Image 1: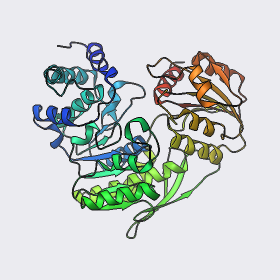
Image 2: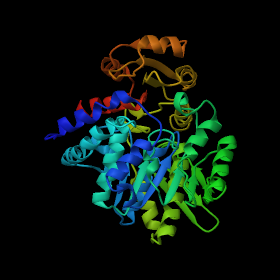
Image 3: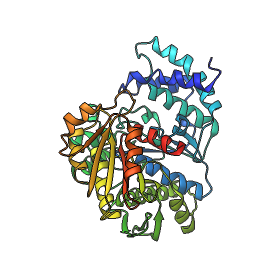
Image 4: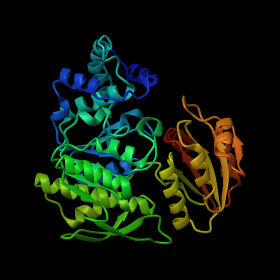
Length: 433
């Protein structure tokens, strides 16, 4: 029995070394033993290479603005483990972590003795999530896929709606080497006759999604075909404005606090998913609720402005597609400014490709660092794989950040980017200091 939060958390994290073990047989065994908590509440299942977290944030905010209770399951956490399982935007209590760990631990011991083997850390947390929401019974639960879709531990759920945000090259060693292979993995969350909303996805990836949806008789709504957004960039404001329309609906001058043209696409996709869900469940909403919900949405370390004069911005651009949209956002929103970049990454990422994008950041002064995490790339890794023509290397990220801050002009931008685990540590450091 775990009596303290620290003990429960330490046990959960002992599973970390397991890494991903594709397949949902262990989760099916767990759900059976727990009397199928995953069937006890309505849900929306969300997959995608990037944009999952911000889509969850927009949806959470939209449901809250229209008076509904909403659960969310996301990863990784930024400030504290409990954020992964949240109710109405608030992380679960420490006591809940202890209770849930005590419920799951005996089953963990039992399954470890079977041919299925022990659970991974993510399977433990996913089981905790299903159990938590079966007790709390929110009006809707937003479930973010951990990795891929088809073999992800969340894929035991039968949702009311599926959302696939974006598709790009990431986790190649697990999901496949081509866009088509990755799209097929993401399409694995689709269920027979369950509606699907997809974000700005084009070409062969879109063709794969449409094919799978057709095979499963799942009605599919696509960005750019069934719903549209028109971005109205504002040169001085850090918020984004846009219009959303479909054949039968039009909402003008919607505003979001998350920065970048890609966030407009994410917000439009979330809004369409929200409207589809409300239509299915016969829930009412007003234009005022939509405006208020989108404007209130917040998601940390996505072009998050921590300070101004100089700007200090945190952005978890942890893969090549995210780095691509980061470069565009900097070009659009910080034209002409000098940008000091502090970057750290995991060894599992496509560092040579990301290095090419780092060099495209306008007026950039690039600084590479490392941090204390099992798969963090060392300075030698970064130097060898990124092959940057001009970059500075710093063993201690805290000293590097403090020095950049001390030498920056008030008009400069200090951008901290890379691994979400690194961004989590940086956010703690900034808020504490």
